[in-house]
Structures are given as structure tokens and as C-alpha cells.
Amino acid sequence: MVYRRKAVQLSIESFGSGLSTPLSPDNEWVQLADQVPWPQLEEAYQLSFPSNLGRAGKPFRLLYGAQLIKQRTQLSDRELVAAIRDTPAYQYFIGLPEYQPQAPFSFSALSYFRRRIAPLSELITNIISDFVRDRLQAKLGHQKILITDATAVPVKIKYPQDTQLLNQARLNLEQFIAAMAKQLAVKLPRTYKRKAHQTWTAFSRKPRRWAKTTRKQIKAQLQYIRRDLRYVKELQAQGGQLNQRQIQRLTIIRKLYEQQTEMYRQHTHRVADRIISLDQPEIRPIIRGKAKDPVEFGPKIDVSISHGVVAVERFAFNAFNESADLPATIDHYFDTYGTYPDEILADTLYRTRANIGLCADLGIKLSGPRLGRRPKQVDPAKRKADRQAENRRGEIEREFAFIKGKLGLDLVTAKTAETIAVSIDAAIVLANLERLLALFSVPISFNVRSSQQTIKIEYQVTVVVPKSVA
Image (cartoon, rainbow, N blue to C red; front, side):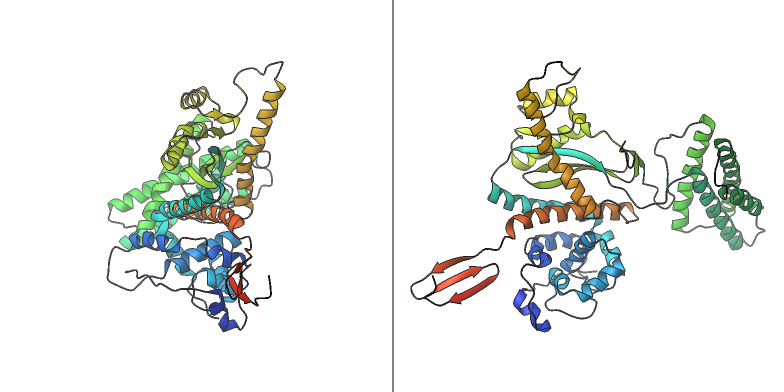
């Protein structure tokens, strides 16, 4: 597939001519369209098309603009295409030359697009972050303050239970055995699936499950899976074939069987890299200790804010201690601005002896109370300074509330690891663009006098007024 750029100059007045009604310049998406560096993003997107042959791909602005709208509105792909068809402002944002009453693309194109830009998602995010940073610095000046914190991004999955995972694995193995037995034209091995189904049904219908009953059910499921795995191995030795998707699922099931067997024998509920979903094996439980959700299932991100720009310092599905990422965050700040920050606003978790010593060596002030026992006499000035620093650190907490409450990171519906990363990057991009829009979307109105007339200049509107008007 080849990609060809299409340069289309858009204007609000010409776009609205098909509707006989011009678009409002105060519309959020109309204003946001001017805050995105589309040409630079087009050049980066061309890296996904190494060939010059084949059918031309759809424009980057068309699909990436739709992805940003999806992230903001939290619609499904099918609902998003319908909303774009019915909303002129959406069509203007995604770069259509004029309003059209038909859907500009199929909803299935979005899933292919997300997979295509997954390797470039970080590059796209950096291009937009640099663009936003340059404009904010030109407006606000250089502010040498770094704010950092970490949060978990929940993913929409079924609540994990060991018995349900083992039962699902057993059903998958029975399907594999039946398919390979049919390929080889041999007699179907005895899997005792009717008895296994009866055992599971009797257990699942119990309103209250005691620990002893649950352990008994896990033992039974492990025995069924062990037998089925042996049958699968024997049929594969005879020449039975599985497709690529079935092979991937079989690998996950084998790892699940090893983990569950170890936990059963050790009488524990913890194991390294624990699988909690067969459909999304990369998801891990993240213990957060929050009152509402003590455990969240999804990736964890380490986020920083500098000069008003939000950036993801680390993205991982496994849990990690964010205090160990502070040196890398400081180095990233130095690589970006060529200097170290004067102050770092962080949670008390970041105040380790290593981080405090590093900040002291670099001449950086790390906010927060000192280590050790709390003193009996606290200097009022120090208490006030710590309270003010904590209030300023609240900026990143408000940013978390915004990207989770308004930009869809409170519950990510993407299925694969690549598309989950694309969704998180899209939310970060929108957060930066919204910050830029809040600063540069203020309507501008001023008069310019010439020798013969006075010109009144407003936001995207130029009006010639009579000379008598001051």
C-alpha cells in the first residue's frame, strides 16, 4: 500500500457553503483543528508506507482526527462514524473539504489504522508535545518546575476468578482436541467434558462459595486441563495442526496451568506475571490501595508535567515503583530543555534517600517533608511552604481527573496491548491540545487604522468598517 499526501486548504466560510450556514468559529473542534501540526504528522505517518505501489491509503488527518474525536466522546467505532456523518464540525476537524452527508469511511478502517500507527504512536505524541511546548513557552516563558506522579489505567475486562479462567481454558482445549481429531480422522479421545460441565455448573450456581469448595473445584479443573493438554500434545505428534491464533491461545493456557498449579500446591494467591485474562494475557493486577478500587486491572503510567505539557515517562503492564523513575524523568527534562528544573513537585513516595541525594547534587529542590520521625516542633514557615507545594502538586492530580473523566482513561475499551497504548497516547495528546486551546482560543478583537479606512480584526474574521468608526 502506498500513501499520497493531499494538500487541502480549509476555511470555515467555504466549508459551510454546502450547508447554507457557516460553522461557528467558537466551536471547540473548529478551534482545535488549527492547533494540530498536521503537516509534520503527515510526514511521520509516511514511515508506515515503505512501498510506492498499491492502493493509496486514507489521509492521516481523516483517521487520526477521528481517533481523537473517539477519545473525547468515548463512542464506539460504529457510533463514531455515524456521529461524524451527522456533525459538520467533526468533518471540518478531520479535514474534509466540504460537508458531505455520507460516512467518509467504514468503521472497520479505524481498527486497521490503530494497528498501523501503534509503532509510530510515541513519535506522533512527541511531535505534538514539542509543538505545544514551543507555543506555550513563547506565551508563558520558561518555567523550571517539574511535576511527576503515577497512576493506573483500568482496562475493561471481566473480573478475574481462578475457577472461571480454568473452565474457559478447559473449553478451549476441548475445541482444539475436537478440531485436530477431525483433521486426522481418528476417534475423539475421552475428555469427560460432560462430567466436567456438570461439576462446573454445580459449583457456579452456588450463591456462596467456601474456600474449601473453591479449592476442590480448582483441583478438578486442573486435572481436566492436564489430561486435555496431554491429548493435544499427542494429536500434534500425529500431525494435527492448529492455526496461529489457536497456537497463541494454547501457549497462554499452558502458562496459566503452570501458574495455577504452583499457587494450588503452595497454598497462595500470588505468582509472578499472573494471567488474569485469556483474551488479554498482558493485563496484570495493579495494587493501588485506593478506597474505591484497591486493585485495578490495566497498565500503569508514570506522568510528568513541565511547562504545561503532559508527558508519559513510563508505560508498563507490570506494576513498578515510580520512585525509581525519577532519575530518568530528570534526564528527560534535561534532554528537552538543556537545563535541570529548579524544583520538583512529587508525592512523598518519591522522597527516597537516593532521590533526595540526586536532587541535592544537581541543585534541585524536591518538595515534601524530610525523612524520619515527624518533629515535635515544626517551623510554621516550613509547614506553609510544604502546604503550598502540595497544592501546586495538585495540578497533576487534576490532570489525572481530566484525562480519566473526560478523555476516556477511566476505562479503556481497547483489546490489544498496541491499541491500549494508542488510546493512552491519544488521551495525552488531547490533554495537551486542550491546554493549548484554553490559552489561544480567546477571541481576539482590535482595530487597525490606515490612511483611508479602519480594519476591525477578530478571530478568523476580518471586517472593513467605515472610516467614521473609531
